Image (cartoon, rainbow, N blue to C red; front, top):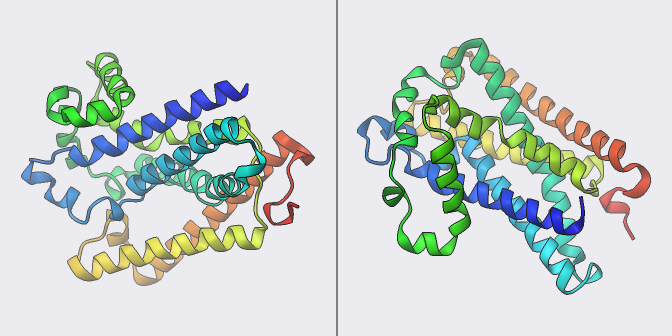
Length: 269
C-alpha cells in the first residue's frame, strides 16, 4: 500500500474500534438482567480489554503516520518504536489469542465462554435508535464513527444480531491484525524482552481474574468453574504458551514478508 492508503486504513480502523469501544458499554445498560454482565466493568473481559488495546494501537499508528508526513521520520523514532513494540508484543498476540480461544471454546461448548442467556440481550443491538446511543456532543467529536453505525444499522437488519456481535468482537479483530502485519514492517524486540512483556500482561490479567473471584465468588468465564485448582493452573500455563507461540508466529510472518529489511528492535542503531 502507498503511504496515503496506509494512513487512510489506520484512520478507518481506528474509528471502527472507537465505535466498538463506545457502543459496547451501552449494551443493556438499563437492563437488570445485565447486571452481572456489567459488574466489574470492561477490565474483567479480555475481549473488551483487547478492543481498547486495538484502539490505542491504531491511534498510535495514526499519530505515527501523521507526524511522519509533518516533521519527518527521524524526529519521531520514539513513537515509531512504541508503535512497533505495542503491536508485536500485545496487539497482534492478544487479538489472535482472543480469536482462537473464544471460537475454540464456543464451538466445543458455548456455555464455557458465552452462555446462551446472553443472546437475549443482543437482538436490540440493531433496533436501538441512533439518538439513544450517541449524544449530540459525541457526534460532533467523531462523525465518522457515527457514519459507521448508520451503515451497519442498514446492512445488518434481518441478521441474527447476537451472532453478529460475536463476530464483531471475536472475528474481525484477526483480519485487522493480519493486514497490519503484512501492511508494513515492524521491528521486533529481542525474544527475551518481547516474551517478558507479554508474560507480564498475562500475569496481570490472571491476577485480575483471581482477585475478582475472591471478591465475588464468580468466575469471569464459566469454563473456570469446571476446572480444579490444578486444572486452572494448567489452563493459564497453556494460555501463555499459546500466546508465546502466536508472538513467535508474528515474528515469522514479519520476517517472511519483509525479510532482512527489518532488524530486531533492540539492535537498531
